[in-house]
Length: 239
Image 1 (cartoon, rainbow, N blue to C red):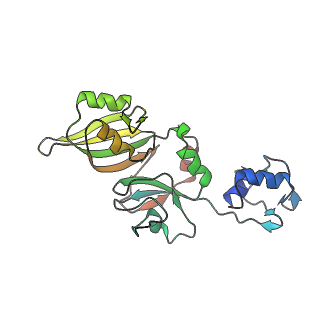
Image 2 (spheres, helix red, strand yellow):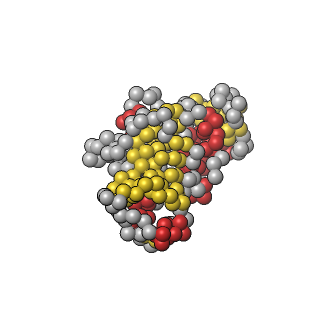
Image 3 (cartoon, rainbow, N blue to C red):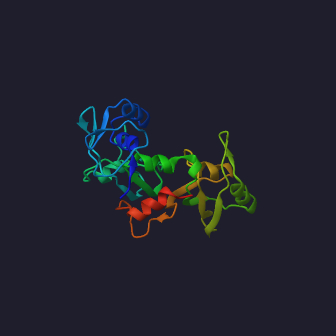
């Protein structure tokens, strides 16, 4: 049975931030199974009865889903323009899910949806460098020099991207387009489009095919599946 730090459990229940939860603990406001706990780092399990100021906390079960996001869908919980959002696809579930990161409105592909804030923060932290594989249809054809530039890292809007992996999958000479696979680990706004633009090519179509070790196998656009416990454990240790 997995044990978690008490302050983390309180924070994930939405009672307070982890820092404020620590102050609540040291102030003697928290009880575990009827006993006051003031020691930070105390670990509790799923069945522990936890109260703050005498009120029991509600511990929501944690869930993470792999979602095949369609084009024309916004990666937010709400949209001022009334467009369909990724959250709309999960309305029938008894818990609220939020996207880990985002995909552009006109980009399709793999997006993780979760109510596990700790997992989301872990995966989105730059230091973890989670690899993401995109497939782009670009206008024109990459030259060897442009491929080398993408592999080395290109500059856009005052930022230089980290080195990327580049693989040309298909070239359509008649339409003057290419299908290119790009693997990156950053998540800047419009990053893939801006990287191709930096070497002189517009992206006509874009999809994220892989996130860390996860892919879209078995799903069609608009479908999702819940991640298995072992997949979540792997994500927590991904590099």
